[in-house]
Length: 286
Image 1 (cartoon, rainbow, N blue to C red):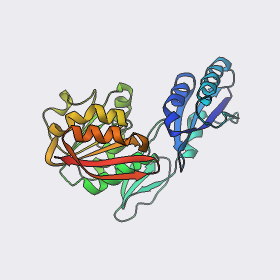
Image 2 (spheres, rainbow, N blue to C red):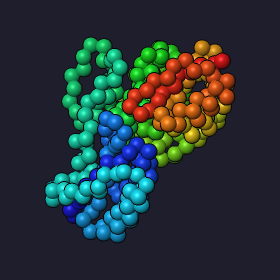
Image 3 (tube, rainbow, N blue to C red):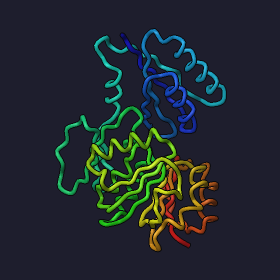
Image 4 (cartoon, helix red, strand yellow):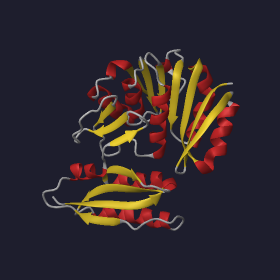
């Protein structure tokens, strides 16, 4: 069977709806961020899936009526080319902060002195640190996590932030996500990277049974402004007295919503970091 790669450039705020189209009607999804305000989304279809392609094209046409989007590109893959491997070319080695190295598993790399290597098998929708907010969260974790710390990862997704915290010396990480599929995928990554014994991973939100009355030295939530608004009230009771909350996934235009939720919860904003059009907010107890 021959396959085609579908790709389109979309504004950041339309990554979610177009991703939905690709995930529902295509096979697999990869998201590649670009400097500025856009991302490239890719999915794959067998050459005979005309009805699936029609659904995607109609959805993109509707989105294009309200936003400036690129054209849907349809590229035939070679007869001997497997779509399951085609997306790998879009991921490369990534250095973050001072010593973090994000390494897709298929790339050869000779570790350098001081490196903290996160060896990942990304999968089609795996967060590898390329998105500005993931990058900013990794930077913050490198600065804040000390050996023996307890860390809370809200909206763990692929688990990359949990893996980074473990590699930085955290004694235990609680990883929570409302998406059960994400939690199952994250658990596989935790086992593959050898950190499963350090992690409690559960589907759900906070506070919940998975937190078991713990307080955390660092809590991180790389979700969205709306998500921050929902979880912020629970954060003060989950933070240790000197703990820090890293709130991220916030588009600059939604700064007020996230900032208000954080301060209304009784937290004090220490720092706001902007990377491209995205904000990461560091805060603590009031």
